[in-house]
Amino acid sequence: MQTDLIDKLNSTDKGEDALVVVHGGAGNIKLEYLPKEKLERVEADLTRALTNAFNLLKKGASAIEAVAAAVTVLEDAEMFNAGRGSCLNELGKVEMDASIMNGANLEAGSVACISNVKNPVLLAKAVMEHSNAVLLVGDGAELFAENMTKVIGLELAANEYFATPEALSELKRFQERGSMPHNALSTGSSQGEKYGTVGACARDLSGNVAAATSTGGLIGKLKGRVGDSPLVGAGVYADNQTCAVSTTGFGESFIRVVLAHEVSSLIRHAHKTIAEATVEAIHSVLSRSNGKGGLISINSQGDYALPFNTQGMYRGVITASGQVKISIS
Ligand code: ASP
Image (cartoon, rainbow, N blue to C red):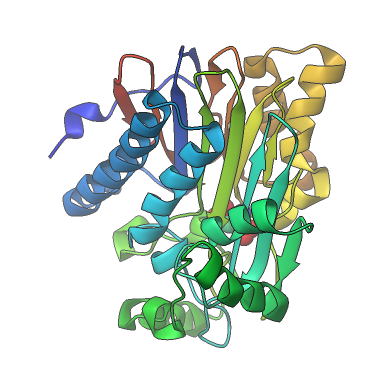
């Protein structure tokens, strides 16, 4: 139990040297209503994601390796809506989206509507490193995944790995309520429902930045629906000259205002600081599309910002000294 880690993490701050920030989704989350056991698990998972990535950076790994490692931890944890914990679509099937981007050279890889891969972020990374494509979807992405089992040892997983009894009953409860597809924004933590998409941004010892995002999308979503998470510019962006960004929230609103790239543009063209740019993006630009959610962002100087306009966002940072801070609402 490490609830002493729970800290009012400033929405903007400065780290140095190796730096990692992560999120585990934004929504109707209030610290005081979270069951203790759930809080402990979320905290432990976010801490493990941060420390794994940080230890890699300290050994000289790239920012790309670090964000992939952090997101892999969160995909394997059942607490989040990504990888193992992904929510199911209207047909009871998992359809996951993920992305990764390298701020050093603007290379990016992403996948959408995939259902056969244990760690979608690693498939996105493989698209970036082992193909000429940026985005692969559906059957094509799954075929590429099968090839990647031999090339990088990518692990596949059957629908049963994701469509657990809990995930199926969560979908049933949702469908019985007859609601529109939704995400963490309209689910109640007291009912034990899952929160969010996961993401990470990192700065390596050379000052390069990277970002990655991974999600199961919205519970009960239409088959074939793709959110912002795999879209470069909407749910992920990284450029050493400006910043790295990973977003979470109702994806359609983020797509309409191309939110992640908007942060970068505000820094590049309007000469805003990362603190100013992220606050403007979340509290002004996103509200133009009635959007709810949050983002995490860092730059190559080690500044970071984690703003959101929902009740809470699972988030954390690990800075040069190895100090971990986790915050929720
Ligand atoms: N942005 C994700 C989507 O719309 C969901 C989330 O972040 O909670 O697919």
